[in-house]
Length: 192
Image 1 (cartoon, rainbow, N blue to C red):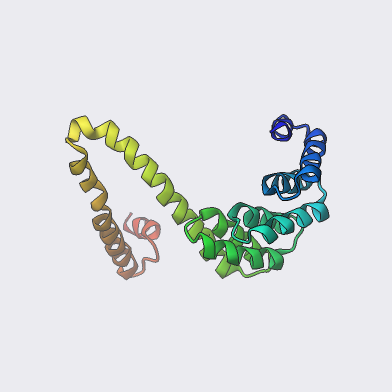
Image 2: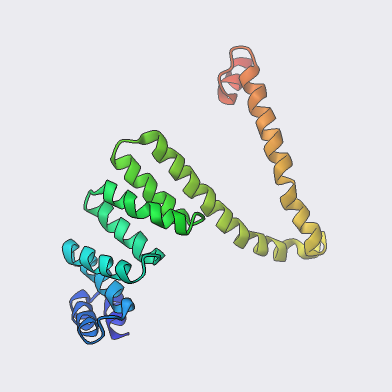
């Protein structure tokens, strides 16, 4: 606890000493192992950090935070292939975590797999939008419930999203099918 307070206040050397003491006294406490790995990383001690993350994962290879943080460390060390190896496990454990896709995208970009990287960036963006949409849906429901009616009626608003998407697809096809128009922006210029 004191180590985290020291870390939060930016005193990483005191945090390190406190976490090392915790680890010395309770070597099986994975919280202190992961805390120590994180502080080593912040202190630019990558070998020690990697060792502690590996130790944490040896106790629990399904620890999503340790997998993600280990991958971040590898990306910082310009070791994208190592990061990808750990991120595969993270994606298997949590395929709906945007941060995992974002890290995969960064790793793929580092090894010049641009198309695959773009796909992963898009997946991360989509998952972030969905997460925030759920939060926003609740706030919007509260804001408009009095005007529209009960929340059940308001949920109908979200169902029209499919209709909007269908019309968006039609619109794109229309603009692309117009003679000489490559995109909507050029189509407008051609009329004037």
